Image 1 (spheres, rainbow, N blue to C red):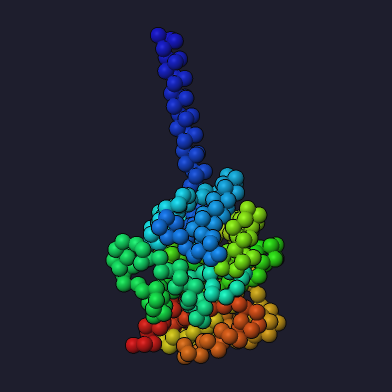
Image 2 (tube, rainbow, N blue to C red; image 1 turned 30 degrees about the vertical axis):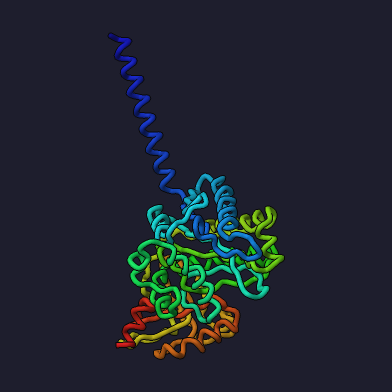
Length: 366
């Protein structure tokens, strides 16, 4: 009887220990930084076929290499939208990322052109300001025509219509700063570490980014239609170098986030030199975001005047200019870009509070 009680007690301790271990494992898993890697195209959709190469194969190889390197970090969980040569609807890719409650979404592609254009670029979802950006987005978005029930799944979205693309552009406004930050780190590695031609961080209307609710970027590794670059991207050396550059950028982004832990909730605190609260919609150009408080003086902003600052969560955002006429924002944005703020973009305020640009445009249209 005594032996039975001892065995019962030991069994209870073992069960309790195992239960605690499972709970700890669950907690550890919950704390992991989740990265969703999306290899563009796949299956019946080969992507572009520049110089006989297949975009879908190169994208997948690089995604798997990035994922394998990231998975060595015990604090990172990698989720793939595809790990084999299968066709995945664009809206499903977004669903995979959202279901995983991802911290980042990175979509990998290769570009093409009728000329011998070359170089690597990284895109975030935003207002494309030129025809080239629209054409890049249109090529990648056109895959929806291969999907069943695409009209139902995308609510009449037309990749060939600039107006249709414009309607989706600002859904990720909340994550735009972080997306630009990651895109900048990727581009820095491409240009400085690998000496690839820098096609910079740009904004365009990619439907696959629109489907996600986290910081998201789309990487165009280079042009398969360029003889030299196509061969590089199809080589083991090229794929290894590009994948490690992306992996290092993701890790650098995570390190930055870890140092600046805090919510990203809008505080609606407009500081210094900003407009007085009125019922008018006011447009400004966001030129920077930082965890540091900078004195609002021209020497801190490459000579630009009329600078204002807004605190959102742990970040301070800095804006150039102020106008109630949306048509004037293009000139302001061009001025900011000439000063070196290549990732600047338009934001809107009403009654002294930041609002979604889509809402602002609807407001002034009525």
